[in-house]
Structures are given as C-alpha cells and as structure tokens.
Image (cartoon, rainbow, N blue to C red; front, side, top):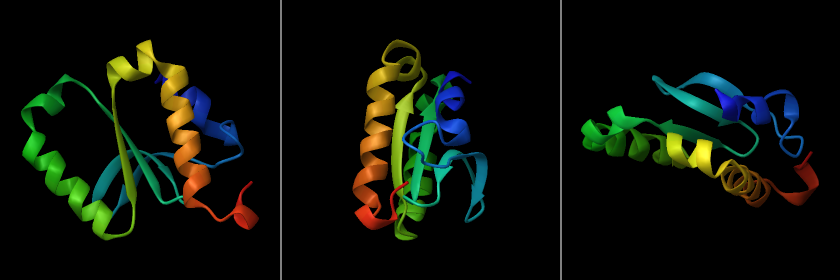
Length: 100
C-alpha cells in the first residue's frame, strides 16, 4: 500500500506506525501508539458496512483512540493532504516534550 511507504520506519515526522495492528479485538490498518491514532483506509466494501464501521469506531474511541478514516481515492489522489492530516493529528495528540 502506498500510504505505508510514508508511514513506516518513522518517515512521517519521526512518528512510529504499525500496520495491520490488533486493538481491542479489531485489526486496524495503521496505528501510532504514541499519538493513540488509528488510520483506516476505506475501500468500496465500506459502503456496505457503514453501521459496522460506526460501531467499531465508537469502541475504539471509548478506549481513548482517535480514528481517522480516509478513502482509497484520498490516498491515491490527495496523498500529500492525507499525510499532512496524519502528521498534524499526531503532533496535536502528543505533548510537545514527548514528540520525536
């Protein structure tokens, strides 16, 4: 996946991301533990599981996690904007003295 190229090995501002990480029984696409940020990339199948995604997201948020949902089209057509959003969320969720 193209997004993983930019998230792995601390490439996005020094933040560490995990791919296909298990959290409270769910496999999330990408996860930054330091920022407690989940990034989900939604393909066409998510159009048919809106309620299931809503419930899953609510459970993750109850655990104190922020969930950012982007579409495949966002990643392929607006990658720079997606990376900027992810970076800003990480920066805003981590105290300045604990940032990379």
